[in-house]
Image (cartoon, rainbow, N blue to C red; front, side, top):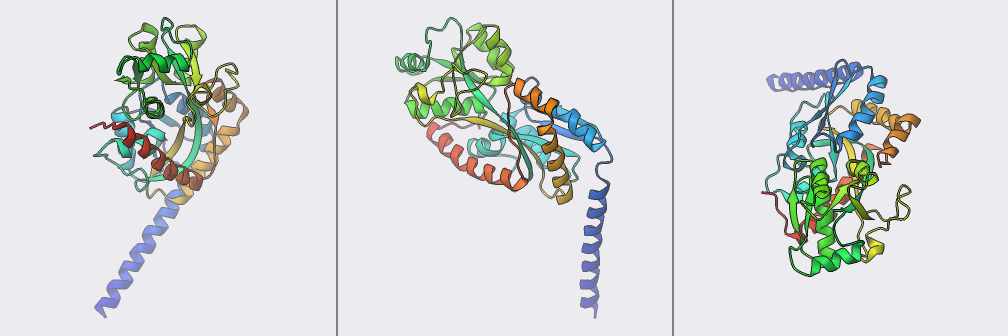
Length: 324
């Protein structure tokens, strides 16, 4: 009898917890939401700061964008992974945080799949190969030739180990057989500025933070990393058509919540962010910054993460890169 009573109590407790979760999800959101960007200002937070006002208005609560840089995005990602799964802390994850870092760091403070609830694939940005204006190479063929003159003859910047800039260069090295020197900076802006000063020769830069400097002529673009040419730069060839067949990198950014976040909250976030992505004003702002709009279901994002983990594990292994 005691055993039966105990089982009934456990069942009642489970039902009560489930009911409380449903009620909590129905009342969500009742306070501001923290959107953690695991990189410094002036990089990927451009995406978050464009989307946040539109989604805030739809939810009736402010979305506060908070930069938590460090460890190639690992610091901010771990913070969200260990946050309460109540929908009030979410992450702007990326290919780096959810596909590259698991292969790059031997001790990572989170599991890219188990510790997060995928919400929506927001957008992608191409990387553009930019060089110091005084650098002799005018195209990728000349850059490869310069890199082959001597191992380590060229230096490239990035915003940290495991970021898309670093991995784009690692893939380039793997496919061409060249060896360059990696010079990591704390953020994309710093890495791009290093190219303008000639502190490094080149960078596989995210397009948004490099866009203004390209237009001002302070850096010179020589190729894009996407499979197709960009409408904004129709005369700029891809890396693949410039003598590196098979090269393609497009950096995606997505919304994640902590694992265990109630499904109704995940679905609501998905709906509101999907609506923001197709809003004409918001869409125009994103496209003007060089973003490619994505979207899709939480399941679509989960599949993307799974496939990207396999792809970048091969690149990291071939490059021999390690961040710790």
